[in-house]
Image (cartoon, rainbow, N blue to C red; front, side, top):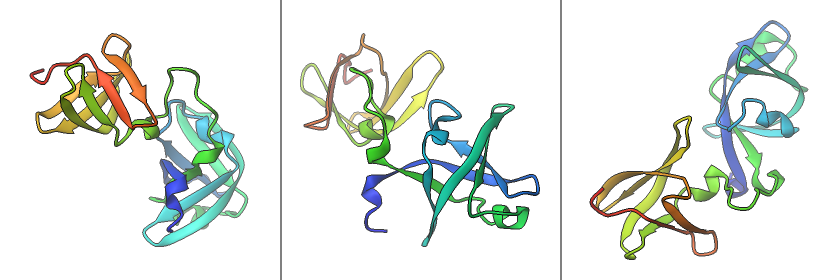
Amino acid sequence: MNDMQNWVAMGYIKGAFGVKGWVKVQPSTEYTDSLLDYSQWRLVQGNDVMMATLLNGHVANGELHVKFEQIQDRDAAALLRGYTIYIPREQFAEPDENEFYWTDLMGMQVYNRDNACLGEVINIMETGAHDVLVVKGEFGEKLIPFVSQFIDDVNELTQTITVDWGVDY
C-alpha cells in the first residue's frame, strides 16, 4: 500500500443492497453520483486491498447504489461493508479557476494578513451556504468560511492559504 499517496479516499461501502450483488455507498463527494465517473475503484479495509470494476450505478432516494463486475451475489456484496473507496488522483478533472478539491486543501497552512500562522486545515465542513475550513493551531480551532470575503489566496505551490481573519476570532 505504499503507493496510496496517489489515491484519494472518496467514501465507503455501507452494505449490500438486493440479492444480485449491489452495494450501498456513502460518498464523500459534493454530488452523490460523482463516483460513477470512475470505472476503477480501489477498496481498502485494513490490509485487505482489492480492485473493483464499476459495472453499473445509480442514485435512488438520495443513496448511491453500485454494482461491481466482480461481485455476483448478496453474500459477496455484504463482505464489502466498511471498505473505504479510493480513486486515483490523476483521474480527477482539473478544477475551474478558484475552485479546489477538498483533498488538496487538507494540510495546508493558514496565515492571516498579518502573517500570523492560524494553523493547519484539518477538516472542511459543508454548511449548505458555503464550505468552512476547520483550522487548528496555537490559537485554537478556527472555523473560516471558504468564501472570497475571507480567503485572499490559495497557493498550491507553497501549500498555504492567506485569509482575512484575526487570531482572536
